Image (cartoon, rainbow, N blue to C red; front, side, top):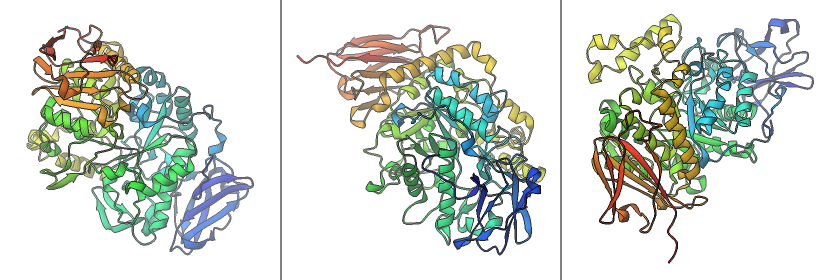
Length: 630
């Protein structure tokens, strides 16, 4: 664990196990040993400065179960527990992170420009529902052309199924997915295959069931701020320096004890911090200081479109590597599927707006949002496109729909092929959601496994959430929204791997493989803004041109018809196209490998313009070497 030694939790040392916990305001903190360790005398915890308590317990080894008693109350699991084998209300377990023998010690990570991300939910990705199930399918992900996995949150949560955003044991991988060493083996195997692995972490709230942090100190939370999910964490109030240290240590824990290659920070717009230095700026700086020569990425999910998040601290920013940028998804869904409820009402889906979003990374740069009733966004000028993670699907944009339908469930194959080409050859960092690569038939629904009372409230709240949507204004329609608590809701969300071999799924997967191979060859993510030209050609078509760039001495031209049919006319001057270029077709979505009923595209030149004629939605990819100097 180069660069990191824990200061919280329980960890083996030469003469026993060191226990350390923050519990300011408590007069007595007792270590309670359980299971096979019950026969060992638990030493008294000594009070340190600033509310910390610690003890070395000789005779205790990895695998021991323990809890803490606080002024006679409890016992409670450790806030920094490394594993909860009996669930979030049970005892914590001592884990030795150095006991695993890494095979991929030479791995140093991947740079942002090489990322093509695959988001997955461990419990519904494979039939096994485990870390081992993901490990067995890493070859598929690698052969697809993906370079990085992104695992939805792993911090242990109540019940046996859930999305993970209600986690309460932030240092403990969910026991329903496997053991800590099984998670290490998954990461290790991915690295041996050349895959980076990111993990989703939630630092904006804790789940409502099993969150014992407040028992150790009320200072973990603040009433100065609120989140949509409950009490906000205290990053800027009294004793906040210890809360900040807890979450920074959590980040370092995942990056060192499991060797993850980066963090996806959930809903950072709900992390409230009025400090002079924002917690995210502090976190990323301490991450970089600890990892040495490893490439570790810190990526935020944030709906505010704040360019300073990805600018360096020297330039008054927070120094993050990238941010999830949802505007492209929203524009495309409005154009392709007609969505207009909720936040979609802020988007027209016009091809001009799609082109602007591709060119700038996001659409809202300070305009007033009618949905939020305030101005949103800032100008991202100067930031390379790869800093924006874009998608056609992710867990939120599918699972937060009432019926969990994926975009391809609402489109014909031709339109989905066209949108896929645009996603995977755009200069932004693309993200696929599990099963998207073969147009999986399964939805991805919102599912939980709470106790009966909390579960009832979640079910009621889920259905009320959609009352303002036109399709669910009728109570009878809302009653048909799947119950998150029902096991059938979870079962329906699991991928069916057998359908990959059948059409039409197999040809959709072939298209994804071909596009990702082309992306790797052409490296559009290396493009800077000055080499990028994007234009709407008409009400249904967009063209994207990326000029030569370091390591890629070719022009890349993508012509996409998202809707309708007819000729798309390209003006070379508007798109910065070389005058004497000899264009070569690199890929057409109407190739027989990808389409069952072919409608070939036709390209010709007309008065100096390129004209691509479409009989339906589709995409044509052209490349050209720079013309020789005269």
